[in-house]
Image (cartoon, rainbow, N blue to C red; front, side, top):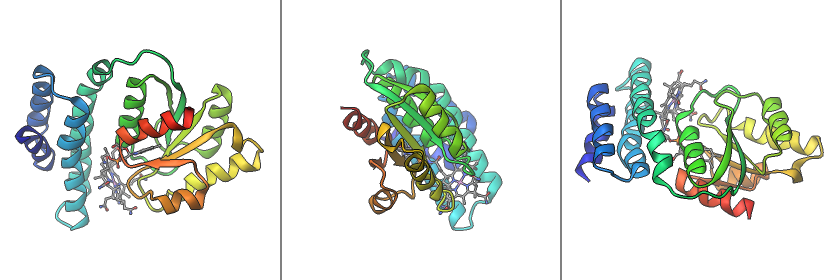
Length: 212
Ligand code: B12
């Protein structure tokens, strides 16, 4: 769809006003909002990341792009939840981005989609300590722990959470799902996690499977 391309371009062009106008247009035209986020603005932020990787963009541009993506998502998020129609509670999921990692956009989208699909979600935010993840999971008796990591240097924290659960003798009390761009099936196997998902729609499918 042409509007998705315009949305992606608004992020790449670092044009906040255009991005917000397009997000508002998506709401006015009742477009499928998850698609708007993933194929529109999400595609834009990925291109910003590539440009940064290629040395075309520097950190201020990367941050501005992220700000624009986040503002568009903030505008769409409440409506995204109401666009879905599930009412029953499917289970409790704790979501967090691991310690040392401040990437929160993808984790927040997954939380929103889980809520929209009937899960109770405890979103602890980003840069969350391993001990906090474990103590909150215990305190709230969640069914699933979802851990996001976007950096190859912080992914190891995902494994440390699982190792710590094992050490405390409570590994079997929780299912653990991993996510974030660098996560692969072989990493999931190495960590002895219960699964991973590449996007928010697959994350919902995985959480349903893990809670069934
Ligand atoms: C936006 C962004 C930022 C923003 C983050 C803002 C925010 N509030 O989140 C800012 C500017 C702050 C930032 C900072 C940095 N960044 Co950055 N950033 C990105 C960028 C461009 C996009 C990430 C994003 O939001 N994608 C959009 C969302 C929708 O996708 P997603 O996160 O992958 O999430 C989806 C799936 O992965 C999945 N998912 C995600 N989490 C979970 C969890 C579970 C449980 C499940 C099931 C699924 C799931 O579902 C989501 C929805 O579809 C990426 C490039 C890229 N291609 O990923 C670089 C990138 C991740 N950043 C990178 C780097 C290096 C950094 C910095 C270290 C830069 C610096 N020198 O300071 C810092 C890190 C600081 C820190 N300690 O964390 C590198 C990482 C390289 C590496 N191999 O480790 C990347 C890959 C850029 C690059 N091409 O080099 N960054």
